[in-house]
Length: 263
Picture (cartoon, rainbow, N blue to C red):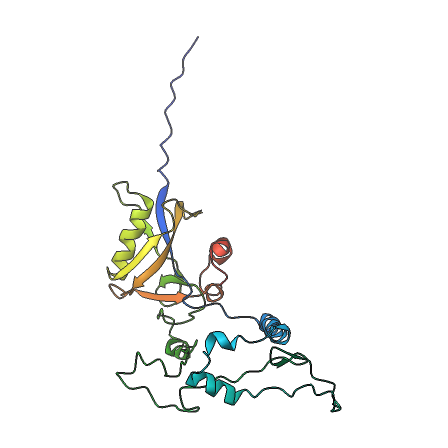
């Protein structure tokens, strides 16, 4: 038997590994209600007002108090069902001092002047009689379309992307020469590009997605920002975008769309 010695082919270089950070800011306020859903809730509210037994005024306005007197002045008693009187629109159905034929409409006593727009005094922050005015769902960042601000799109999830102003992608950090855990690589990379004034937490140390690109494996680490501020380092450009806005910004959108929150 004759043995033939062959030369081993050159070993292929090991696959490069990188951590891709999927950093999001969760919604701050409740989601916007679609028009159909808003109509449904309005219908249910009106139906409840029509079918409710009666408003428990004795629970909210104690008998003999000034508040109860004001409530009684604003809400007159219904017309009694007098058997000696004819009612063209039908006889009243009085139950618990309420005409059950109609929904119950109430007027509550106010502790403020209607139409008053003056700002409250500095020492009136604990004034229980002040008018409660909810903050607007549209912020100044929304009006200015400032996509670098976390104070925009409060009802949606925002995702961090970085780039050169023309092309954008999720932050990507290559594995250093010394083997390091993937989540630690993403953490060090985030502090490198965004400073140390940002607080966040990883959903899991295990990657949520892997993608092979340019002979390298990119492992996605999903994280949420808790507080703080993203301060760009070394002139890096960044944006905070919703899922809908990412569709026209990043080339790999179709591959990662299932990882993004629709809200």
